[in-house]
Length: 331
Image 1 (cartoon, rainbow, N blue to C red):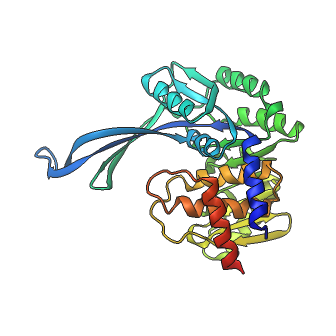
Image 2: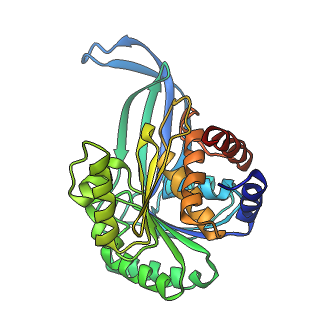
Image 3: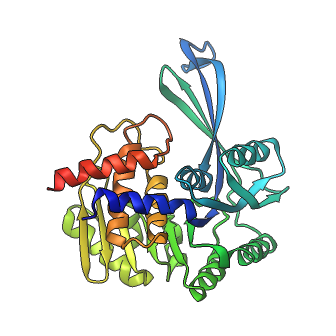
């Protein structure tokens, strides 16, 4: 297992990495307030709204995670010709994310997830979205803009939330383009689209996604292994990293299986943990780390994030401290 100095050297290389993120862009809206009474119109609480905030979500949050770790990030996706699209791109630029690859579609509103929160509890979520498949013209345009940048990239992250941007046509072209240039390609998958991901470097499904994608009902560790092996074979990936919550992670690479125990001590919020995993995993791979150590590093980062409230990011210093604790536990 790597020593602290080796991890520190890897983390310092993050600043030189150039990562292309492509996928469904989402604006997370939060309405904060108080709920002191029940509506006379229906048996539901009345929330007295007191403030409002916004955060990047979906592929935008992955880009935010990667940028927070020092890498140069180029984000590709679609927003509507609307106020919410402007809010999202403004937020991303504040976080040093390059938004030149974001296309504007006047026929497709920006995807927004509105969460209404009172007394530290989410009361309801409202989704505003159009999940129709991205038009062929827009997909071709996105392929062209990716083509203009891909030679300068160290890795590509595909973030699929099933909102219509990640289509089979788009991925067939982008994966082929990246493989010809020997680029790292990682995927945070959507179950319905597993067949789109053939030939990528690695994929990071959670247990539920792995079960559905492999067609294996998971009831024990042996079932997890069967799902991992099946996905590895069917998708012809170099690696499948299955996240297992409190049970940690399992990496399937060739004929080897590596179990990585969880490092989370206190779990407050799992929001965005998957985004953290793929961000750190891909950055580590792009900086030359073996897949096993990249998995361990992403596991540590996820363990830190779930100990924070809300969709959060992790810092290099936190990862370094987490690695030391992990080494101590592993002896």
